[in-house]
Length: 361
Image (cartoon, rainbow, N blue to C red; front, side, top):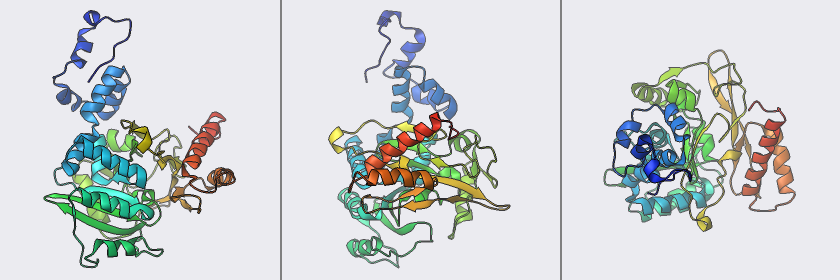
């Protein structure tokens, strides 16, 4: 790759430190692997040369996904499919991306809205994966999908999951989790905050980065369904300490009753390399917002669901009043395909409120 130098520096005058980062072959990966996430982010802010080197070395999506799809070209095609369908990556794969780890026994978990589940499944099968139905599922994937995306899909543990479809290719496994409303409802119903990380076609978002990657803590979130304690134990074994109480400090990412949204001040956002303009849609995840609520013994996430015929997808909202106002203004102008305009309007609305001091950050 080509590295950038300040225009005032001739190559012969570049410092030894900069020459180290300009080495085509060097011990960069070994060095970066020993740098904590917070320090690595600060190092990325020093100059473009270091930023792009760290991105290529530590936060490479082709490296993360090539074991499932084969090469960088296929990974780009997968991202284009994400853009068309609203599909996101989460679970252990997204956590590994941020934490720069590899767990060899991990599957790829992708989450997709019901309206575009069939397109995601077609892409997976065209890349050599075979549908592996469970005992309760139809052996024909099309028949099973027709149930999953129906107006009244069967509830899967009551956590916003309409269905889970398993696909295998050799030792690799991809799970397609079909969302009843929006994938974010599923993510925010996970057993604890350390796994609340997502990768869209355009960005990677860690929703609770300080606790997850600096203090190695995970807030236990009350949710229904079997296997919650087993899931928490898996991440205890991987180094996270489970905590039971959120913070009362509104300046904390774990602040109780604080409205949070994807991409806010607390989120660790890593922009991904841009896709070709003609294939890239707006990243709609920043529309979604939520709150943490608690009582003496438990903590849970709270939101409402925003839906309208003019919107292609559904969204979760923790700041209902503001979103209703913004969406009403958008809907008064756009009668269909209003999602991207809603996203832009909400981002501008929040920036305005922050500048007015009406939001804490």
